[in-house]
Length: 113
Length: 111
Image 1 (cartoon, rainbow over the protein chains, first blue to last red):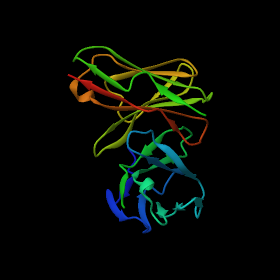
Image 2: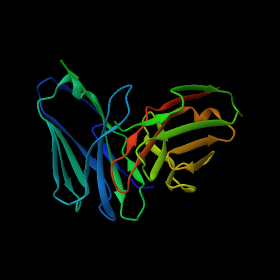
Image 3: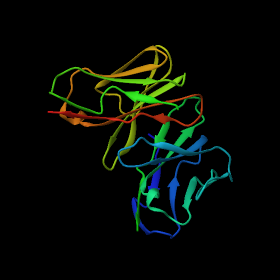
């Protein structure tokens, strides 16, 4: 079983502040790195799918970077808002030719108004 | 609007019962997945399917089986439910090598 680690496990951030958290994954057999946002009582929703070393993706105030050689990805949130409160999951896909994702345990983000 | 639906949001069953969890997607996706989510353990893959009648074991297949007779439907079967199968079950679908779309989840309690 592949090991995907996320840190921190939980985070409290003041509204308006920026924050970031980390996903670490195996650097061998890399195919893709996914980020999902999972709000309470809703389904996980995809934020980004990243495949290339050095990739940077952005969606509004949220952005992500990818380093496949050292096996990590950062997710950044600029100017946190209450609606950003959620659990953020990363998931790793290998190049073994199937669709399987291995998920981290997530970073639970709470924005304090 | 793309959609993955699951047959129940909440389910309570007794130990030893056979349990069926149904998942339907309307996006014509080839791939479908069943996960369970437990506190502190994240999402763990039980089984997935990349085509009709095809299935592959995930990381924790023991105690479960699956069925995919039609492209849009993927069923998870607990042959004889046990208390350690109390969990949140999430279904997802995807087209090849793309993001997964998740259903709302089924919270199963086995007494």
